[in-house]
Length: 297
Image 1 (cartoon, rainbow, N blue to C red):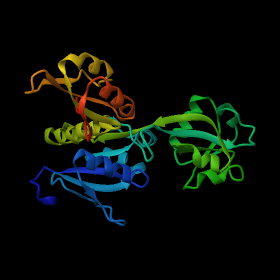
Image 2: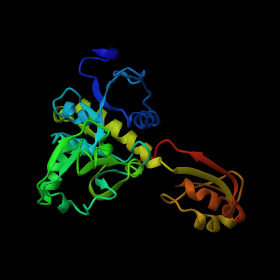
Image 3: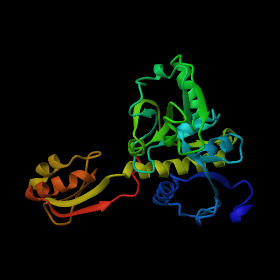
Image 4: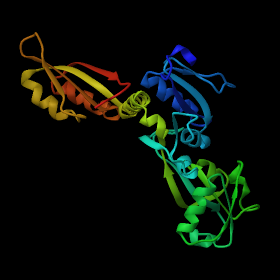
């Protein structure tokens, strides 16, 4: 078996190649798994001998997980739905190429188009990479329209080739750059860790997948948060505690110096610049701010 692991002790993991690849590698590294791949390589190195990974387009990962060629994979909820894949959804992971917001599949038309709602698509032509999602969306709204698969550069096809497009967007900047107007949101999508049903039924593979899920969720939970540590005289403790917007109740320890207390807690990084001067004014000393890789409740 590859990577020197014993028989039956390898997890085949699918990682998304393309726009989500860099963010996924960074997430895996913060979770404790170093993943390295050359620019032309589809078989990345993972510093865990129990994991063998494959770089595959996110659009295809759920199909390979469903049919058992992959035990688990990271892909978008949209592609699970597009492929109608029968897989185990292990957990949601809210990260994308440019941040932590869900991506959206949107119905978009040229700025000058008379189309104002999905109902106006009756008898029209729509281009999209997500044909199944789009057809179900039209059916749900009682609209009959021609839906054609787009191999890419979908934004440039309206209005000369099609009347409207259904396209994925994170910020909407590409649509605006092509003079397109968003009419409606078809669906929102976030990244999911999914598993093959047979792999999930295997005790060892399930434990391994759950370990990966726990660590990845811990990384995302720690996003934008820091650990604040400080010392304070007991007489000023209540004043300091009231200033701390804690994730949970702060940890308080008595120091060897009589009358002094050590306090530590997790706070949003964006509030640190506001509270540190106030903490200092309230009597806190030796204030330390530490970055976090993971928070596991």
